[in-house]
Amino acid sequence: GIDGLDGYRSLATELPLLVASGGRLCLEIGHTQEEQVKEIFYKSRFHLLGEKTDLSGTVRCLVFGV
Image (cartoon, rainbow, N blue to C red; front, side):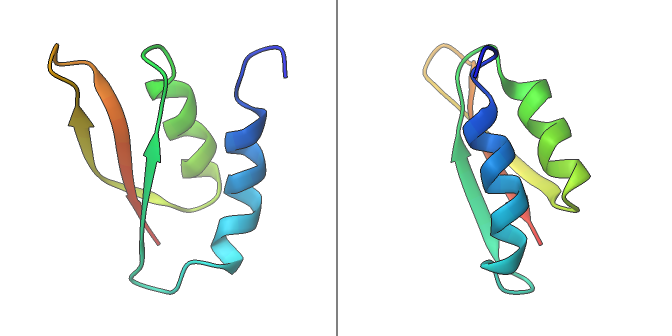
């Protein structure tokens, strides 16, 4: 899509059916997508468990729980 987030939106609607209760989801993200991806997954009732950064300190992976 125009904002580069359509794939995350699709995942956010499908993954609640596929990830077991207590399961974890790790998503690689672009350097400017952190807040938008968090919001998309919060709306699908995922909760943020952690973030992983690259060597420059930029968040590149978000870890969510169900």
